[in-house]
Length: 223
Length: 245
Image (tube, rainbow over all chains, first blue to last red; front, top):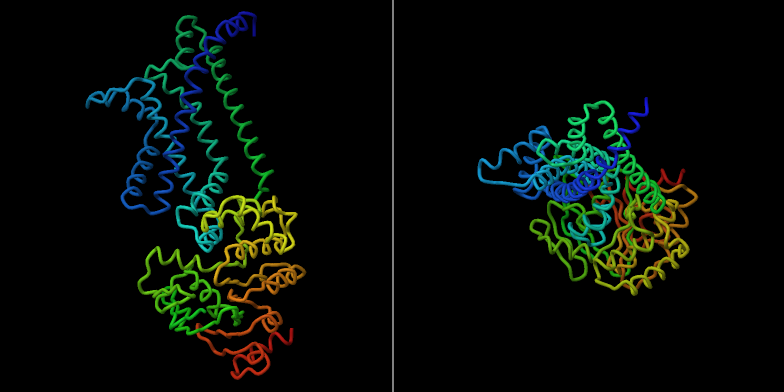
């Protein structure tokens, strides 16, 4: 490795990191937050056997888990204008990422809800809780806690998947890196650099996950 | 007063309860004994509708339901006249000990935080666990968890407390502590119904005893009658197993 490479990294580092802070991170956080809401709603409707909604969410999960994310992005950004729905690149990305993450997280949360000991539910019923109160106070908090590892898997996956937004003109890290490569013809070192930045982001998230798990276990004891 | 008329329950083609008639007066303690699979727990769970009977009428105080047609509201109202202590404790794992008691009070009795805390602390003291108020269930022994569960049930001031084999999941050395707490419950009106395999406890703590087998009440009477002068051969045989042990 020579000084030229170091110089290249030094010069490009902020140029790549900046869209990371400006697009990758907000895109990830917003999409994951929305995805989580969709997921909780979808899981509750499925577990609670809510008529019509259950079928709608099952259809939704089936479609979004069964088709490539890149294709979904293309349909939303390049395809929908054909039927008069025009979305800017960023809203398209957020919409697609949220729905995609929601489909995966929905199954995670649904599984965790079903895995909560039935005794917990029975105790709540025996105490006179309604179904909604039982879910809200007892079952859902335990289900979410148990799904933390799997949800972080999805979360970390999403950080990296935001690079696909480069294909629909979002100027996130990967897009910016590609631009620099086009100028400098240094694909190897620049793509390694951007990979490294993704790695840092994901490392931070892994730490956050460990922290949350440790805090939770400290408080309630590992169950 | 509790009154059951012709309670029946089947799981698939398996008939668990074959027409149970029963009456318990206010303030009484009823012990339900019998071999495993006789329907004891199912009968108890029919009383707070964790199992819905296929047929029959249940009355607890002013609350009454006919199992052939019961609405969600009736079900809720009915459950709120009862409280249950489970074999597996079933404390809320995501709530601290004190919140296990406060939360149901707030949800069901709309009682404020301060009042709930006061009631919870008084009851925790009564079951000897005031110092564990801020611990989580997983940090307690089985015996301690069961005592908290009893405190949680008492806090609701139900018309009836249902105990479903409250000591069966405990280490032998922890059993007496829990039984002592159950014995110590003093109430003029509250009915206690206990499904148990602790015969000596049933003998000295219960006012009335029923012996259940194969979904039917084989024998019933005062504790003295059933334990000391059982009329049915089957009851005698069942009790002998315990005397030998």
